[in-house]
Image (cartoon, rainbow, N blue to C red; front, side, top):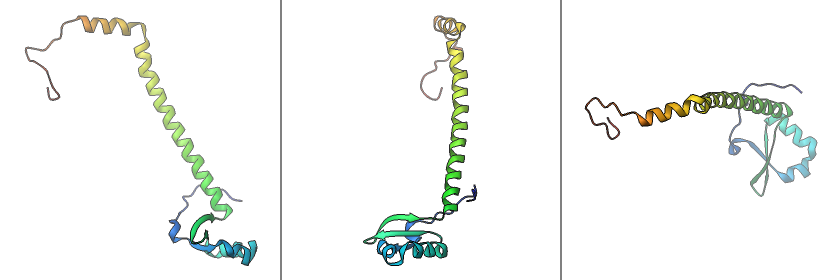
Length: 121
């Protein structure tokens, strides 16, 4: 089994080669594997309704690798966001944060003679 991280093309269900579940009984597993080798992916249907997709092991391994890579990227992005948030939060938790807030609230606003109200000031 080889593991590849190249993107796997996944066609929509309606574009896959389909085989009724009865083919599994009629052709046997060996016959289904022959179909899989020739068609690449096989949609197994029951009364014309999709039931399962059979894919080669190599494609399954590639999908798992892509999923793990995606999870790693997501975790790295979240770790960066957590670090940024923690940095911003630490400023608010510092000893001087309360003092600066009280000072800002107690001081008079410097408007420069203009009234500032609304979204566009």
